[in-house]
Figure 1 (cartoon, rainbow, N blue to C red):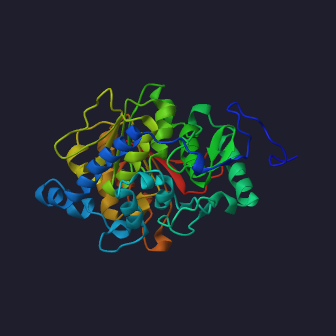
Figure 2: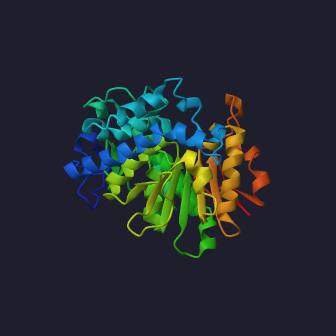
Figure 3: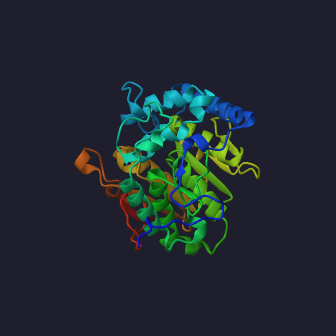
Length: 364
């Protein structure tokens, strides 16, 4: 008998394989919406002042700091269309954030399929009726393969908010995006890199945080003293609203006039990428993470980040990255540009199905 031939009643009262509809998300309170809007306005302001701050600071390299490719404002595309929808900060758009995050994962949630449609498409009320049993079976089977031997704290439990949808499995929502991020969580948990920290609280830096799923998962699993996400401010709009809603606050945006000093009430700091060269020097991190975006950068950008990362991890920290070799698509393989900045490179190959590129640990 297969896993799709029987049902289990989880502790929360939902039946395994029940639809998790976005229509049944936790309702956002007035305070939730206002918090998201306040933070959203701050992030939009960081986009507005970016050009002036980059050109006025001799410490900032414009070719490193300014957006290009998919985020180039001169080339409107799906990335910017999704950003512009969320940047309206209308309550109805905030509630649909997860559907607008397609460009971070490559999955279209309404169709529950990779690379299908646009994240800016209208969201139908009955979208769940379009999902097939075959897709459901593939995703749940993949989820089980990723989580069977993964320590429980590292199994994602996505909050039922902001458009999250899929199927309930052991009282967790499973969908294409959650499986995508569970691969990261399982890789980190099973890699062995955490053993060198002897269970002590970590300070973590993530370069490119997507919509915030990995940050939320590692906050629950590792209880870091601080988690810094360095990303394009357009991307920070997504992670700021997602994380502030999931955590009822405790998120702040770093500006040119503030710093990364740790505050007990604010574990998450959002750092616009154009401030990386002014704010990261002198900082120390135990774990630095990049997944799937370095091989979409220019060689110059990768080398600039690599120098900053190497200095920040010193002799005790680790840089975990998972990236595709994108040379066949006219881009790069970031692993070609990292060796000059690190003394040690270890490939990570635990016994789980890996479909999102090769993972490595770099250290000094």
